[in-house]
Amino acid sequence: MNYTSFNKNEEFFVDMQRCIGCKACEMACAECETNGQDSMIHVNYVDRASTVQTTVQVCMHCDDPVCANVCPADAISKDEFGIVHTANTERCIGCSNCVMACPFGVPKKEENYDLMMKCTMCYDRTSVGKKPMCATVCPSGALFYGTKEQIQEMRPNSTPVNSFVFGKEVVNTKVNIMMPKGSTELIIY
Image 1 (cartoon, rainbow, N blue to C red):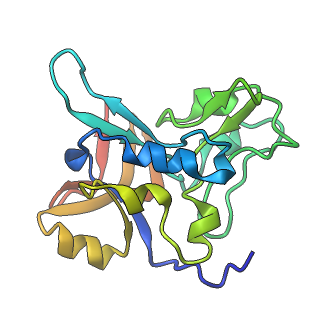
Image 2: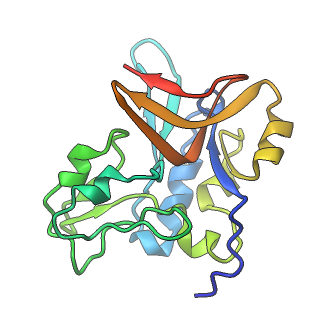
């Protein structure tokens, strides 16, 4: 694979307030042949009984991925571009340590394959200069893949944040969440 087209300046941005719950991202992800026709992005309802608000759950590609750190088989790797990859099929023992350890609840153990699977930011596409499938089909702009300059121009009242505080732990990620202008981190209780 030719990795020379990979643009390190492009990043993934998620704007939860713009998600309309259409699930176009899930359908596009499932069409990707590298996923075995399973979606690696998930649209969830915040509180289905009282609101139609949805959120998008995608791998955050942590700088120090706890999913990889707790894997006893060394099946999960992070590459030089900051992409945390789905478990290597030849190494994964299906223990689910990664599933339980991820602070964002992203990895899923696919029982049919006895394997952990998760978003790889469409590495087969992004490594050759294309955008992730989900970001190309999102009609509301909740998912965007581009530069910080582009997103700041598109969302002048928002700030991309990629620092998350879980109690005393700070998790920095490759993926950004759009927050109110001036925000520097998202504190999760």
